[in-house]
Length: 312
Ligand SMILES: C[S@@+](CC[C@H](N)C(=O)[O-])C[C@H]1O[C@@H](n2cnc3c(N)ncnc32)[C@H](O)[C@@H]1O
Image: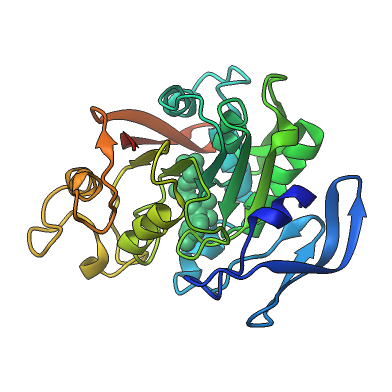
């Protein structure tokens, strides 16, 4: 973990109180903390840093089953393909990440990509902001993202057909500022960052995967600036009781506070001047992109992800 992140982070267990984390027994290499422990000086909780990866998720998540699937080698290689295949000119690659990146204006301050997986969008944000952090509950995803951050390149074995595999090499564009990004294991429902510390917050294909979508939006709102802030949310709204009970969904039902479509309900929450996401956000015209996940050479999932970009 880059040393400069130490000053930016707080204990995620003590929220909404904000207490610093102090490094104990840190072993460092240049500006990187390789191993050590981050200790909360209030609750005493100890968060390890192992092989450069800071483990700051305060929950053993309630949706452990969902999270575990994101720890498998197959899913890591699948997401590496999904995130970087357009750059490597793969035939079936989608332009989703480039489209989402095109929606974000340059902005002073720190960008946070929640549920950022293997890092594509965090790298994109290194060209728009002063610093970009990717957080995810999957340690395997964060390890892969950090490897790319350190080396700028990676070769992975991806499934071709049956037991046949082929190599897929990723080379990051030189314009991405790898020295300005970091990835940590953390939870979108209890972020290790103080209130109003984030200028650009992104949540791509995450809101339907967390046990409390509204808590995710509240947490987004807590950490983002009250002025000079941008928020981009995109999601296929594949509501599922595997991730969250139906009573928690922000759409996809015909009863209750969030009856109707998820995108419309989220736009309403963001725009509400007196609501729980105030100060209100000004919302641009929403849209959608086709996003592709690859399983093997002859099997791709094509997902329509609806986005909304908002500023305040
Ligand atoms: C469908 S994937 C989307 C990944 C990425 N944002 C993208 O669009 O390519 C959902 C991601 O959210 C992560 N995730 C699930 N629950 C989370 C939580 N509570 N906090 C942070 N990340 C979470 C998963 O590990 C996974 O990487």
